[in-house]
Image (cartoon, rainbow, N blue to C red; front, side, top):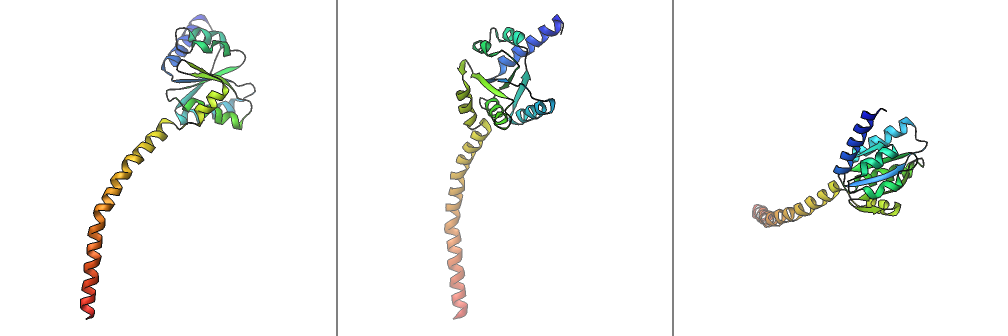
Length: 172
C-alpha cells in the first residue's frame, strides 16, 4: 500500500466513523475468506457493515471523531462493525461471535459512550429501529381496528335480529 492508498484508506475510514452511530471493535483471528464473506453478508442484512482495519491507519482515522476513545482497542487482527442504526452492528457482531468463536468482540462505542463487551451484548439485545417502528405502527393500527369492529357490531346484530324475525314469521 503506497502513501496515496493509505491516505485514501484513512479518509474513507474517517467518513465511516463520522456517519456511524455504533462501532464495534472485534478480533477476527483465524476466520477464513468464506467465513468473512458470511459475516459481511449477515451485517448487510441488518443494515451494518464490517471492515478489516489496519491498526495504525485506523488510529489516524479515529482522530477528530467521537470514537477517539476506541484507539487503545486496535491491537492485533482487528475489524470493525459499524452502522447508522444504534443496534445493528452490535447485534450482527454478537450473533456471529456466538456461532463462530474465531470472532471475538472487544468492545465498542455508541456515540461518545465507550462500551465494554457486556455493553455491546446489552445493545445487541435491544430491538432494532425497524422492529420498534413495526411495534409503534401495530399499536397505532390496533385502536382503529377496534373502533371499526365496534361500529360494525350494532349493524351486524340488527341484521341478525331482522333475519331471525323474518324466519320466525315465515315459520308461522
